[in-house]
Length: 369
Image: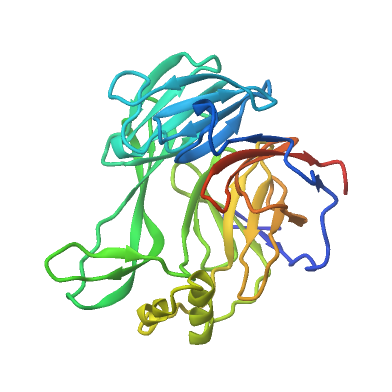
């Protein structure tokens, strides 16, 4: 750890791949919410996120019905909040697209298509809606001083019809006041890669790309993180836009080959050999992403999901303390998508072979060294 012109730079070695941090995750979910049929209160569709309240209750953003669904600590449905509509506390299409803590004991639910968030108390009382101003479309998260961190996607130019290309638009970020008005703009930063096929007479449309580099943004304590996984590096800024901290971890970049691309597509489409034709001219990125995902837990620890290279099957995460020092590797069980990590739990979502959605809570014991 060193200081460079007011920027704290934290350099970490890579923990040995066969090592594990002594923290323990349960061998099976402690709570599972979801069913293939029966009581509609347990049928989940379009889950946009989940969070656990201080008393153990679990809130699920069920976008398919436009509801926030509340379950007790054992997974028993208690009540549902919101509903589809344009009124106070209601949600538009494909919303709520997420649910997260709001300062105090409140929570916020995302309605990105309407560029707003709705704030509820822990008992489900609708407090207020905050509509993002200044052209910002997405709320990243609240700040400790009462402000908010927001983002929007920049436009990009369409290529010639009949061509295909990897496009990387910029993301515009800003800090908003508590009422949604703009405190100040942070400017443009590099966004995620998208593979576009340009067609004649219609808009370009994105197609899945196996090794795309992505942008990540979130609130980390009193800092805002705006970074990408081109390198194993997390860049955190003060709300005034000045760079405050850079966290790096040793990483060896590797370039994907055409064989890597074909093998990936073949595994994803075992019954569709013609899928390989669609990637014959697909461009290759310079290097595989340095990591796959990142989030901050309720205690301020940074969890970075390791990228799985072709042939790798691990589900490893590197855990960093609130200052950015690497503590070690943790292996996630199961095949769920992590939504939230609390002091003693991990909350995630999962789909089974029939595409049935579930929300799972796993225990987390941090007592090991």
